[in-house]
Image (tube, rainbow, N blue to C red; front, top):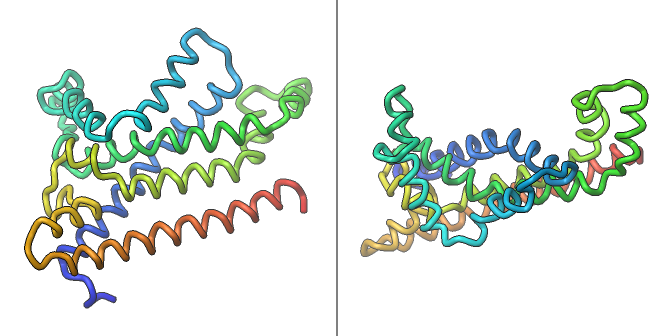
Length: 231
């Protein structure tokens, strides 16, 4: 297997895994909080927040990448301030993780929100009447019950981050060894004569990683669901 892929191809594989893992890590806490807020709270602007969360699913990925560039680029409103303290996203792998996380965020939130809405609020209310704080109720009652949904959302976000292309290449370009992820590498190989074989290898790797992640999530989710139900 090590000889099957060349150095540049392995770089793209490892960078994609790195980007997808970090994209999933930074979105998970925010995804759980946002899903809970949308499922349980009533507040002004709730529908606006819901629309903003799902906007990346509707917008062309290139548009999302352009907005990220305008916001987090070195000349952007946020990017310029971050650059002063040594944080740069544009044309860095960290920017690829940011773009991938934003594109994957709606899938994560939706999966977790559906799980939260399936939990009977009376269970949470019963714990609250026993004197438990809201945070303790969430940690001891809600979170264990929604673990299958959290896992499903996490895997969906990881798979989406692995395959993200449009927003990533617009925001961080396609720099080998720095920002060239699997989709970007496949695109680059298809632009040069004789690159089809390398592109095909990376396509196979992408399919294997995605299917492995989905199958693993299905197995783990079923086991968690049985454990939660007491089966």
